[in-house]
Length: 476
Ligand SMILES: C[S@@+](CC[C@H](N)C(=O)[O-])C[C@H]1O[C@@H](n2cnc3c(N)ncnc32)[C@H](O)[C@@H]1O
Ligand code: SF4
Image 1 (cartoon, helix red, strand yellow):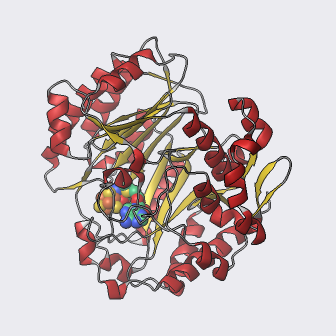
Image 2 (spheres, helix red, strand yellow):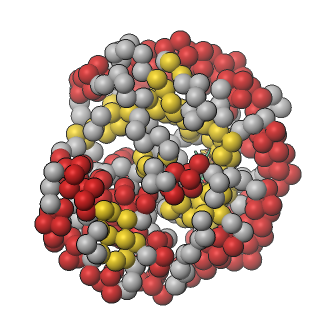
Image 3 (cartoon, rainbow, N blue to C red):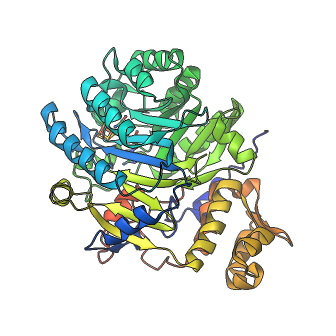
């Protein structure tokens, strides 16, 4: 696969609008508040048992706060705090598992956070035992069991234990290797620490090892970030996520400790990203889309080449055919054609689970129009094209007629050579790949005037529709 990505700062600046990241359609801001958990009970008990499962467990604890962080987390030095949370989590797992018909196969599992390895070895063993008693985990090579790891938060035994428990994929949070940047965001982790965990993870047989970096952090500039990237490339992760720092101090209190004057200018940020893209593609990484790069032989790149890539709350995935069941505070589920979100508030979560209710607080049941639009948006994001005949067949519609208005709205993007529309469908050009979100937004029925910024899908969901709070991040 030869990578051709077109970096045109003027064009990118012009199209750099705020917009959703489309880890779902409708996006999480459209979810409706629910008082009852009956819909979730019905969905779980009536789902097709032959549909495989993907499980997401949210472990919200962190021992230290990183000032930039926009994740749903509880910062505490008190390790005991995780014990009552784990009891609630296991209770939620039991209540959900007992509703499932048959013995559905789990093909994917992800522990996210917060910092899942905040848990002790015994707690991780116990949680995994609990899951294995209630779910039937696939032993196929393609099964994907992953965990987010803060390299500062692992004991000498942790990686070995995780492999023994069945995890085969991992993602390390690095963000930046420059000391001044690390100090400004309160996340000190020397290069040697990252190298050591990378080497050990590889030796233990973890595959598709990912590293998270963030551009736009205080004191970063083109030179410092290029230095970080060179070292990271030398460590040879299979995947790289390069996130755009979302600075929303009014919503994420720790971000108030970051001085605005230390942040790189928008022009510098754009240049940092441009350099990253040039460098990564030069050394053989493939741009999968939306912040994500992968080696060309990684399964994400292969799935994209084979037109088998999907996108859901976990980002790009090779297991898009699963029902996704979320456990824990703020987790999101996607069961049949319905999206549901647990409360991001630990007290509300605790109150619900203690009273034997599911902690679901928001949901949306999709209609046919949502499903048609979701198909278009996900095809554009995953495969840079949308084929009319596939849509016509899948939904029994005349897609050109159905989307006549949207197709005409694509004209400026056609003029700018970001995409082409021909008798087969819509095709994103090399020049348009970095701006594909703009094409998706044309097909989003819910997008309205007050589009503003936010970082993650879970953060999106917690934003109040009635306020003028930022909700969506910029494309770049
Ligand atoms: C839950 S954290 C990763 C796991 C672990 N807690 C750690 O920090 O290593 C998920 C990722 O979100 C990204 N992230 C957090 N806050 C962000 C923000 N405000 N803007 C952009 N990315 C952010 C970071 O790259 C981080 O690694
Ligand atoms: S980036 Fe990770 S370790 Fe840092 S506060 Fe956020 S969730 Fe915790």
